[in-house]
Structures are given as structure tokens and as C-alpha cells.
Length: 170
Image (cartoon, rainbow, N blue to C red; front, side):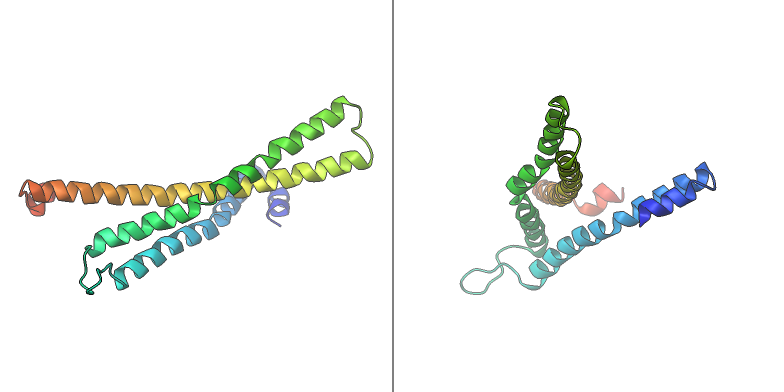
């Protein structure tokens, strides 16, 4: 397990401990990056290949705007889980408070303490999972907002009859 690898590296010095911790941290974020990039890429492919058309089959929205719409819909799809994420995120503090109440009541030993410790561990795990989902939806929302900004500036630029070459490559 990564924790045991880091613990084993503490025997050789602080530099290897820091490096192994950084390496394990970076490895743990790979799957989240792949999922976020995959969801954005999937929406780009879907809205690039299948244009938005009217009843006669004529394309009514340019491809760039349709792709941005698809990315925004991906973000909204992730944000529909917000209620579930908030509920799961609240589990950690609730179990932690239950453990604190048990300690104040003098029930910090025996079966009750073991149960509360395991609930606290589960609460920490669910908190970590919900933070990942929240960060993923924030990244997708930021991509959609940046695309919306690009579209709005393009509309203003076309309205002012300023060619792109003069603004970017001047």
C-alpha cells in the first residue's frame, strides 16, 4: 500500500520520504484527471460529430458553440449529484461529533469505541471522495465558463469588424 511504502522510505531519510509522498500523491490524481479529461473529450466528440439541427436537418448552431454546450451539460450532469455529495460530506463531522460525545460520556472504551472509530474512518473516506467529485465538477464548470467567455468575445469582435489577425498577431 502507498502508506507502507512511505513509511518504509522514512528509514532512509527525509528526502526520500518527501519524494515518495509527492510521487504517491501525484499517482493518486491520475485517475481523476483521466475521468475529467475523458468526460470533456466525450462531450466534444458527441457535439462535434452530431450537430444541433432544426426539424429540416439544417445545422442551427456552429460546432464550437455546440461543443461548449456539451461541456456545460457535462458539468450540469456532475452538479446534479450535489445533494448527494453534501449529504455524504456531512457524514464525517457527524461521526466525529458522535465520537466526541461518547468520550465526554465516558464511553470511550469497548465495543462502542471500536464502532465509533470505524465510523470515523468511513467518514474521512467519504469526505475525500466527495471532495474529488466537487473538484471535478468545478474544473468542468471552469472550462465551460472559459469557452463562454471566448464565444462572447468573438461575437463582440465580429460586431466591431476587427479581424482576428490584428488582435492576436499585432
